Length: 154
Length: 133
Image (cartoon, rainbow over all chains, first blue to last red; front, side):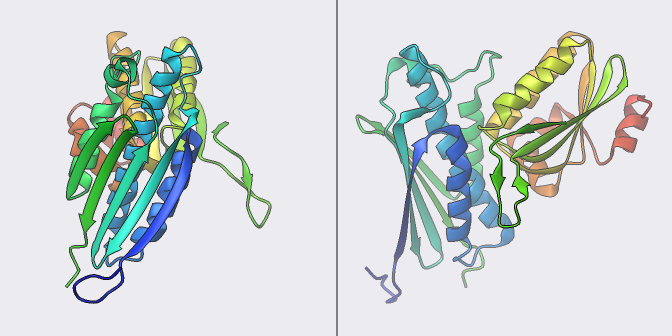
């Protein structure tokens, strides 16, 4: 696949279990991919944090889904997160798609036992850190698309 | 000192840790917690428990040194907000010290810099908050 300017579009895919201990793996992989683009140090860090938040969002919903079934509330080894990074010139698109079933429990139970809505905080961070964010929920789970273009591209 | 996270031997056989929590008591009701590493969805659960254990001992003023924290996400922010709420309800306070620019930016993006007392150094925090180090 190539862009209009003839440059190749590169794609990197990573699949991790929907567990808290693997979110760091996703952040590390995306850090490596983002370093391939002409991003500044801060922009690379922005992408890393935004992807971490998208994965965290999935892990928290998986935890809520597990608790609704009476299991442990710390992610779910039954679910996975797929991170697809697409490099197109100076633009990085990261699709974070989870397989956490959407139920009333995990759609509504955002606030922790201390009343703090972690997912809302995460959403605010994602919206500020990248240029474009979309959320899509369906029978497959949830997909978060994060798009960021390097400011020093030219 | 407590360690949170996986212990993974690297090429030199040294253990890499996600988050190190070190606590220093200045008085019966004042403690300094120094954190080193990453505060994320994995480590924040244990951090929340560690802080809860300290508060149960009667600590009302907590100085949280973040100068060696390399990563902070929304779950980490949640732990800090929850701790601040608990301490203020008991007439105490949570003071944050030494966040790097990247970490400070997260407080700015979320507007949380307005509700936390944030200082560059422990000495500055002690002087402004009237705490003896």
